[in-house]
Image 1 (cartoon, helix red, strand yellow):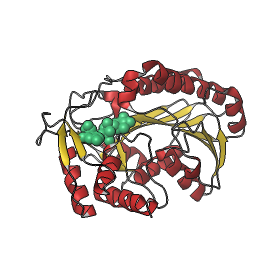
Image 2 (spheres, helix red, strand yellow):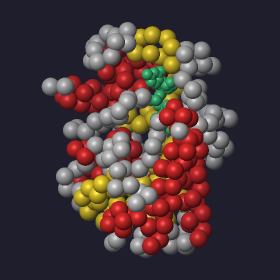
Image 3 (cartoon, helix red, strand yellow):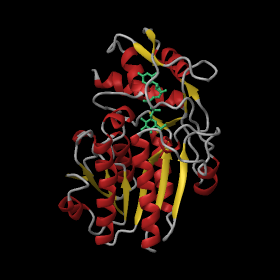
Image 4 (cartoon, rainbow, N blue to C red):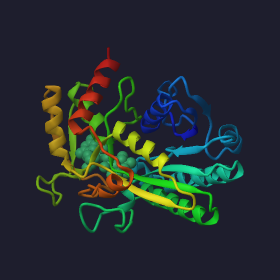
Amino acid sequence: MRIVVTGGAGYIGSHAVRAMVGAGHEVRVLDNLSTGHRAAVDPAATLVEGDLRDRDALDRVLPGADAVLHFAARSVVAESVRQPLGYWDNNVGGTIALLAGMARHGVDRIVFSSTAATYGVPDALPIREDARQAPINPYGSTKLAMEQLLAEQAVARPTFAACVLRYFNVVGCAPGLMERHEPETHLLPILLQAAAGLRPAFQVFGEDYATPDGTCIRDYVHVEDLVDAHVLALAHLHPGRVSTYNVGLGRGFSVREVVDRVRELTGRTFEVRAAARREGDPPSLFTDPARIREELGWRPTRDLDDAIRSAWTALTEARR
Ligand code: UFG
């Protein structure tokens, strides 16, 4: 297949590009390199440096494409609270432009990266796909709006087929790739930097949540298992339909538990400090993985320990 990957220079997108190239697909990447890295793009893919809102860039990558994997988005919750207009412009504006481009070029199939952040603070756990979506930050609001755009486009264009994957917390990396954000805000890379002595200490954002140890609980999915979900999603697209799946393992780990796993697996000691809650953090998010297992046959094969080991290897190799 000919596959267009938006955001293919980013953390998750670059893993997807690698997998698609490996499966023999012809891959074109559209990325404005605002947060992505040129070097992360598999050399067998064609990289077009450009923005989704740039019609010319879309007109270069879309002709002849069979499907789109749409990763490109700004995704830092705290930043979205400070810059809602920028998030709506980039994420929703970019998706409108992409869908218009797909219609222009007769490209009908898309797999879209959505997020558990569209649920906000869930009414019940584990979270099922039919749970109420009530985001508590602009990042989540933009992703929910993008989901709605896809649903409305499927009504307007009967040939259109979409799969929405609502990711929980994505961690780990494939050999030779790594998670790199500037600045880094995510738990695992920050913890590993502390373990490597690159940060003076690790801060736990909030120890007074209504969870067993008082710290936030998340469902950590290995990026390579997440990419496998995209491969399955691509094979299960049906014209006129939008399918939606949560992607997580269905098991929650608290921040304190992740700290303990990192200490044990790296063998390093580092200072851990209690800090104030971070704005926009729901106490507990973990999925019920039944739907994606039953309908797509998704079987994750890696756990949090595998993710920690892979990311630690990547960090230590990058420092050599
Ligand atoms: N945390 C700390 N200290 C840190 C960094 C994070 O205690 O230095 C805590 C956070 O407060 C949170 C947990 O670790 O409780 C996970 O934080 P991350 O920033 O790694 O991930 P989030 O759960 O905030 O967000 C991630 C993605 C979002 C996505 C969301 C869906 O970054 O894009 O998962 O659950 F929407």
